[in-house]
Image (cartoon, rainbow, N blue to C red):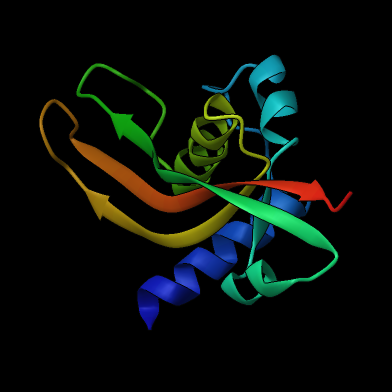
Length: 121
């Protein structure tokens, strides 16, 4: 439940007036804004079609040498960018987990399913 609540807070902060992460260039933020998070039930809409593109991941890592802390917000933005790289414009969010693996002293890893949403013809 706590993980789900953290994800909802992160989704809200991406849509609201959250501070812009320094580690994400403005161009990347603009590109990420082309991708929207949707709820799983929205896949049953009949006014559009969805093509499943696969599982995507986004991560944020704070290395011992980096000054900026790892954040869930950055991982969520990178999740959207990963969907965009697969030609997706929608993501069904699955989960975010805080970790500190490999060369990261702290980190976040988020997972979702990428979709291409198109109007019906």
